[in-house]
Amino acid sequence: MVQRSLSEKGDTAAQILEVAQELVQLRGFNAVSYSDISRRLGIRNASVHYHFPAKTDLGVALVRRYRERLEAQLAAISSRGLPLPERLDAYLLAYRDVVRPDGRICLCTVLANDFNTLPGAMQAEVGQFFDLNRRWLAAALAEGQASGELTLTQPPEQAASALLAGLEGAMLLARASGDTAQFEPLARLLLGQFRAA
Image (tube, rainbow, N blue to C red; front, side):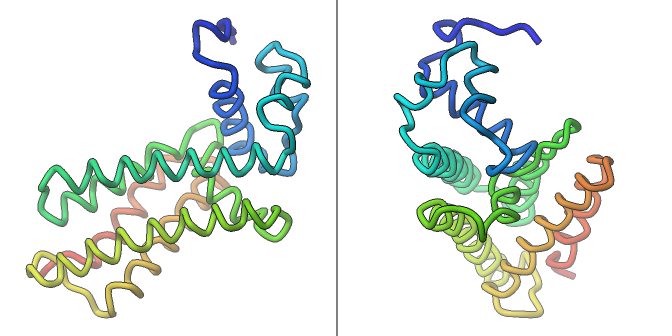
């Protein structure tokens, strides 16, 4: 892998977060050290500590940035004025894009696996990520039910939680099997249950 200088790729803190995200998505938070990050970037450990004095600081910044990016994606999907089925397809594609052939999956899915060993501040950030997903999905499903575009057999909040759990499970199954191509068909099967007859 060809490494670019930090000045070519942006500021040091942003690059630390990029590398940390990739490593955590592959290994989990507890299996990533500051030396792993500094080695990848060609900088000293002290540089990582300068920007993120404690590993908790790094973890909180990492999850917060990931959640904020999701918020922007969801706002963009919502602002397009798509019919509800297409809006849900766009959501699914955003999920599909984080399932990578190298084994990386959604950062917060990985962190949910480590949840009991994460610092409290990180647990709160991970919880906010999943709450954001549930709220957006519940609102979309409720809107689709009201317009007749979608059919629900349970309240929107429960349907949203079930759909999110199914997508997370499909991601883990794709990763564990080494066949990332199976994520999208499984996800589309989950979405299909909400199509209006």
